[in-house]
Amino acid sequence: MIKKIKSSIITGIKNRKINVFFIFLLMSFLILIFSKLSKEYINTIDFQVKQVNVPKEYVILNDSNATINITMKTIGFNWLKYYFSNPEIIVDFKRDVSKRDSFYVLNNSKILFNKKEEFGNQVEVLSISPDNLYFRFDVNSVRKIPVLANGDLSFSPGYDTFNKIKIEPDSIQVIGPNSLVDSIKSIQTDNYKWENINANVFQKIKLNLPMNNDNLAFSNTEVDLSVEVEKFTEGSVKVPVDFINVPQNLRIKFFPKTINVLYYTSLNKFSEISSNDFNVICDFKKVSENQSFLLPELQNFTEKVKSAKINNQRIEFIITE
Image (cartoon, rainbow, N blue to C red; front, side, top):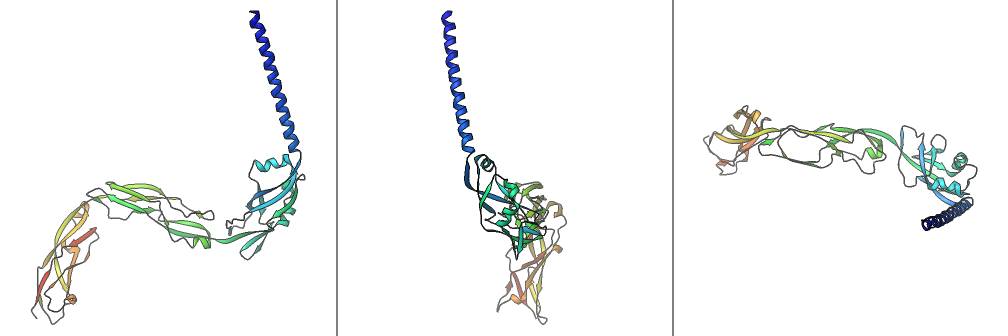
């Protein structure tokens, strides 16, 4: 028992010695850091430009030189705030810049004069570069730009649509510099691929907006796409053939008088289709010498069918004068 107590006392003394050692080590480190931070250093910091009070009718275009390099002399404690945050300097367009042609110009002498309060009395500004900072601007423009669907649709057998894919809204407003807005002719949706469709489709989809569009604002970043889907079927109907451009002094007889037209339509409209919805012709102007037949042409057909075609059947004719 006595041995255990003696062992515990020795261990406690050793632990205290270790703790005291680390406390003195920490204090030495803090004194060293404090000593270093109390000294003056010279360094150059890149300041990002923050623009304020820009006239509403103008937009400042992003340029690669929108930073200011400032060389300063100050103690280490003052440097900490620049290393632990993103340093920026405010440029007031009502006070700090002058307008020249298509540029606003900031002279570094104005930075020294107007920004002393930002650096404080303990900071000595040694140099600023570049000497002048140029802000390119343009007049804001607002235009409606059409939205185009960018994708593929495929339907299950027996299903289709009469209508094109519907986009809502079909155009969006683009706001920005004239030079940029004028270059945009249309905006496409993100690419999509819808397969085996057998019911109405409604889906939101993002717009494929121009890259590097920091100077542009868009009224929408996505649109609604919808498709009305119906059951479809094929049908056929006999349509009279009409000869056109026959000279008045000629009489012709032809056979067959009617031709079979195949069409593709929805089940809802199938019962409405008749021969009057199609126009099949033979153009006598296309007759060459010694020719006794013509190929019929489907000149037009009703909007109630999505597609229609005729077989390559020949129409034989004779001239009876």
